[in-house]
Image (cartoon, rainbow, N blue to C red; front, top):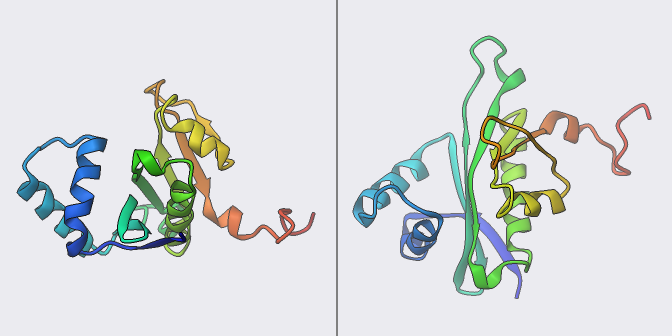
Length: 164
């Protein structure tokens, strides 16, 4: 069954809510969480994507464009991947890879850098399998990942940069 990644809508809330709970929420009140979800969906700097596997939502990703940098404008514009979640029974089936590719495509149209943190044992190995490298940060259990999308966009099809 193919994985289809798409922007989520208000109608996806009933399938999204259990995933948010599994990730961990600060407020267990579904109405409060749903209102926040609706505000972020409507926000121009947010994207909340879902991976559809058949009729079920298999996972989601949420990212935020932080907007232009005060001094550097778009030269240092950053988007942050806040969440990438795949239902446990569907992990290792390509859902996470599809979500990450969609987030990266979204970010590449808007910003120069895509960044995120991932738990060293639970999540970082997934990103490392995709070829990303984490860097040390003040929270030692959560390496920071950063991708310069401008550099990636200038690579040729054979993986080399222009002039090589």
